[in-house]
Length: 101
Image 1 (cartoon, rainbow, N blue to C red):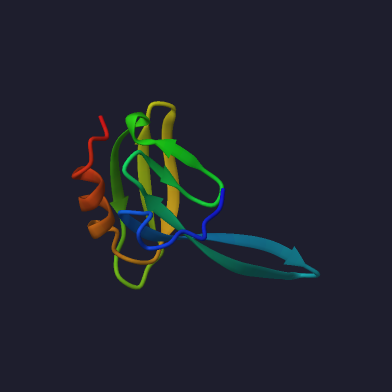
Image 2: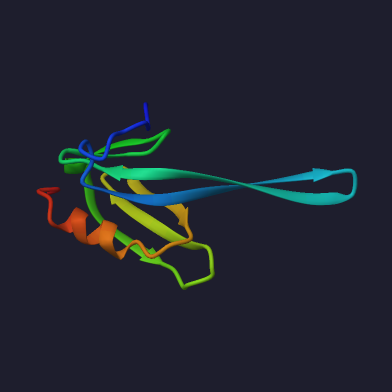
């Protein structure tokens, strides 16, 4: 999927991160990657995943400032978890204003 969306394409977006851990010689290293979860009128989309809104029941989160938190998509096929570093409240509010069910 192409994540080079213009601002007019999406309704809201939430930055999400992925932390990769490796062990090199006797040293543990972490590398952090960031991307976006976009809300459209009919779907949620990240660089890897695509969720039709009709398949998403709700979005919830656990997050505190300065910490890595979790954004949970409650879907017809289970719960999908994304890591976050910023408050997702505006993104969730925008989602709840859609016709997602």
